[in-house]
Length: 575
View 1 (cartoon, rainbow, N blue to C red):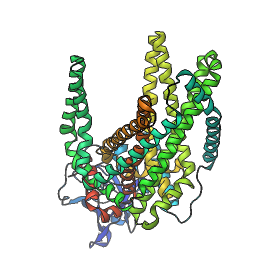
View 2: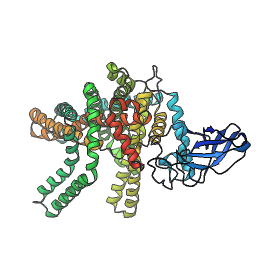
View 3: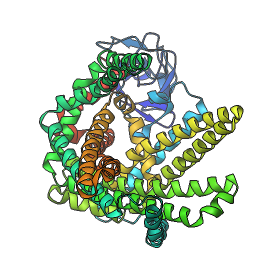
């Protein structure tokens, strides 16, 4: 049986009956060894270099002699591996296991590291080894947890205190300004009532969507994929009367999207249905997760209102000074405002996300099922809250920079500066991509924060290590879970908009109905997004934990385990 020690494969072998001076040995060609390469075989007289003969494949036995510790006759092949497929010229060869022990990870046994510069691949291998060490130091669901990234709790707490004070201090200025400019403007109380009604209605809609995902996952998946193209075609038909060119353009885009669904995504839909069904079944076992959604929605809406009052009040009070300031100073103020708003919104969302990850993690490992929700929420609000604040700050920092660059591009466009506009457009695309990557990867990293109690940086290293060694990237490519989540959020937002508009009209007339509809839509997107986000959190948690230890999923959901393996093996050239 082959194993790896250091940088050279060393194999254990069996001795065969032969003359004392010409003892023969059998050894299996280790994985990763190509014909003509040398591997080390352990014999009673020590390590012996054996050259893999022509035509050999990993796992095939070779026979060689070791006369007195010296090299003997060339190795002789003993048969062939059944079902062998010709190996590719790359270092990774079909027939090898699809996952690698992170502690034994090397460049030649990692498919995702093939084809990149050697130095870069070596750095990635070092990161994988560091992640493996951290995974051993931080086992899943320890009895006691340390507070991680605690300094960020202090910084976020100071930010909250300043924001709340500013919102209370400037709220009177905002109310007076609205009444002075428009005496018929709806009262703040009416708007708050519309927002509350929209948020409550959207939560009910999200709950209904989650139940539908449990009882009819096929319907949810198909609807999520067909909704966008259908909406584009419907809008195109409506716009035909106003502008034939615009209407035909919308119809063409919708038709192309529809073709893409049936031609490119159709083979992925049965897999996605199984994933949604599995996640929804865990939601059914823990229905109170929607109460966490309610908490996250309340925090998110409160943060939005506080930011609106504070920023609007500060602008009204100091608008003359702001207008007289330089453009760079205005960009600086805009950067701080966006940073604070996005930071709080991310924290509210990620508290829910980490809680969901904890619940699904406890389901995966079968840990404290009765108190899964309570313990997961306590972790998110205590020991892992600093990691949530830190990760959310990184995302908010990039999003604030993106907003400033976008505003600068618009200003350059208004000034007629074409060269600056093009440069800023390219920069905006780069910053936006960085933000998308950071936001996406942080959601995976939070799984380790919830399960292990790791800091944000430690969680990122463990996540990269496990998912690279298990080649989970090939499964992630086939996931369409974002389509399902987006459909749920849009559905919840539409219900919230209708509820907000109706409440505004009932309380303060037609003008309040328009404002109430907008606020209800915003509240619905926040509340609904938090509620249906459990589908995304559950999928990421199950897949991230499966990357480290597939056995629990093999026992609980063997069909999902088989699907994961099939997807990876198919991408690696296995059958």
